[in-house]
Image 1 (cartoon, rainbow, N blue to C red):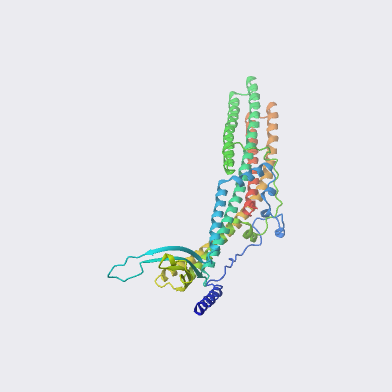
Image 2 (cartoon, helix red, strand yellow):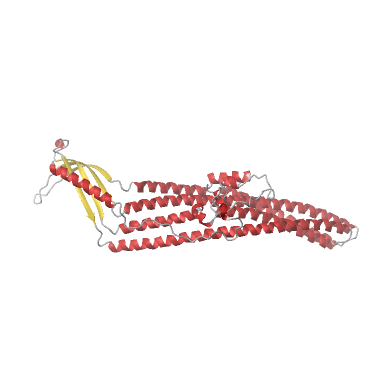
Length: 469
């Protein structure tokens, strides 16, 4: 009994020593890569003083950022039903199970077995017991002295967080794509309405020229030119209608439903663009951009894997305990304490001939860690570039929209003047056709610029990291 007690106390002391050593690791803790951010974005007009305000664009939920209720309803549907987003959420579930398994890495394994061994030795061989009845439980525990198991846990946690950020990145892209598709659909509606109005105007002009041809004031060439101009406008209408159907189908797919009609009740021109939200400071991308955060999680994964690879170079200490019932006769199996047995064993395993492979694995993990760090830096550069580009595009498209509106107003006056001058014989039919054609193109161009303004605003919202909250 004294020997058993001494063995128990020795095992406890070894256990405490291993736990103490387990607090030490062979790699340093992860430290975030330092990146020199600029004070502000290139092309930014707003001041960065409001960067911490709740009105910073990236911090706004999409239901607060987009004012159109129809667009908000489309985004709501897409967020729930989009197939790509649902697949991303499944990846989170898989990573969560991996993380749960990694959290149990420090627990000992436990196996229970019941066996009956029957041996028929040869007459000239070693005589052994013919029969043995054993019921036992075996437990094994690896001392995490060098932090291998802890590194495995950190890797699993970072992988889990990475899948979360990846799903958020899919959501931000989805929100921007739905908004861009919706604005494109409204632009096509506007262009279709403009084309139909101009077709009606072309019909009126054709009738007017027809009357003058009958009166002998113009030649048949004037009638033919106006008819060709009218046919050109009529030709564009089915093309626009085709684009509308295709865009509706694309939006339906984004919303996770079969192709169908997309309800909308507002016109493109009636949508107001809120350009007064501050964009914040570039360093906030580390918190706001899900893809940037996912890239940093990849660095954490590589760092933890490097720690595990380095810990594999050092000895592995394992404690194994086995106990149970053992009897040569089944009738004595449950006779205690005579049938009880126990075994406590400590093992130190140091790789020798595999050291070259383990060393190569560790060197590879270091390279992968450096590679992931470069990819993280590249993701930050790309994010700042996207925001800067969107800010420049937004500022320039606003100027274009002002000029385009003035041009439309000018050309609409020119169409009215050309009609009156033609009726009074002071303008030719060619001047009328040119004025109408220029006005039509200007109106179509204005609708496209308006669509670009809205789409660039949605892209800026995405590039800043908005849309996943």
